[in-house]
Image (cartoon, rainbow, N blue to C red; front, side, top):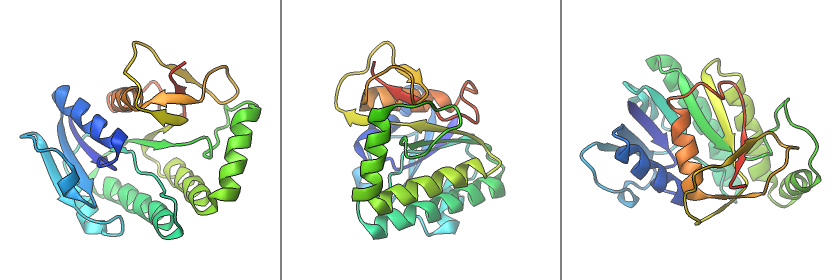
Amino acid sequence: MRITIFGGTGPTGVLLIHQALADGHDVVAFARTPSKLPQHERLSVIGGQLDEAEKISTAVAGSDAVISVLGPGTNAADAGRLPTGFQNIVAAMDKNGVRRLVATGTPSITDPADGSDWKVRSLVKLISVLQRHAYTALVSTGQIIRESGLDWTIVRLPFLSNGPRTAQINVRNVGQKGSLRLSRANAAAFILAQATSTTYLHKAPFISDK
């Protein structure tokens, strides 16, 4: 496949790109700082910002799927760019006829299948108070994705670690039994797998190591 990846310069994004290349995919990475990305014959890099709609469209054109591991950042300016970026990504996908979108989020993006989990609920509440701009950006992004009309999957992540990739991970809804930790290697592997799978089409699985 040809996959466009947004957010590839972060720790999880770099693992994702390496895994996609190892699996034989062609990758187009859209990045604010292209110098942070590796060099590879099947990796094309487009430098740009999330408000540059034409550059985003160029990055998306000709791809079979789009993967975003973008996060909102911790300050108001960075957080505010995330919903704008997703509006531009969705518009670019519509323009270029690309249907498959896999995006990461957190349990701040709720799902109708979720149950009650006091640990997750407390964490989301804490983030909504201490990192209000990030929380608002994530909620807005989830809404943009759900209303996009695309073939989307939102992969919701807990706390990330630098642990190893394991044979299995726990894929569940909030409220079902599981931990609140996930290795970036496991995250990258699961996220990439969704580009070629429809198992979680129009769903928002919450994943962890155990």
